[in-house]
Image (cartoon, rainbow, N blue to C red; front, side, top):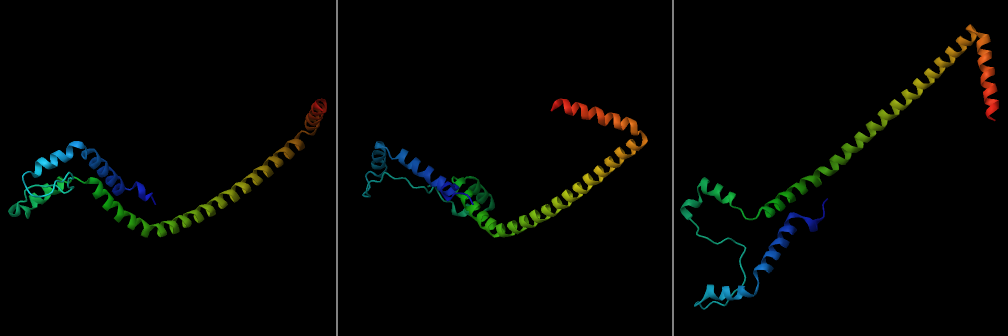
Length: 161
């Protein structure tokens, strides 16, 4: 699983906090005072994360308005975080099945490798027997040439020692 401190939701929260710290400068209190003057409400320098605006109740139920609202989402990381949470839950459920499938695959690969290795050893043994028979046949066809080659090889090997 991935590190929960690097999830899209945590990243979105950190970005929002950084934005709020940047907005909360010395002039934010003055702007808050100007926005609430002459009301009797206390001065507020904070901003809400909920978008403000006019709600059109008659138009809110239409499918075109719903599609428009869906396109105007200001929080793509929150959507990604929610989607990732559902995917994580599905992945946790499927992880055990994936492990079992991987174990079956490894067992099949091990069996296939053993068959190939055994076949390769048998092939090498058969090839060695064939080469040995070929050498014996050539020695029987030309015994004097074989003795001469053996003597020459013995002489060269003796020189190198």
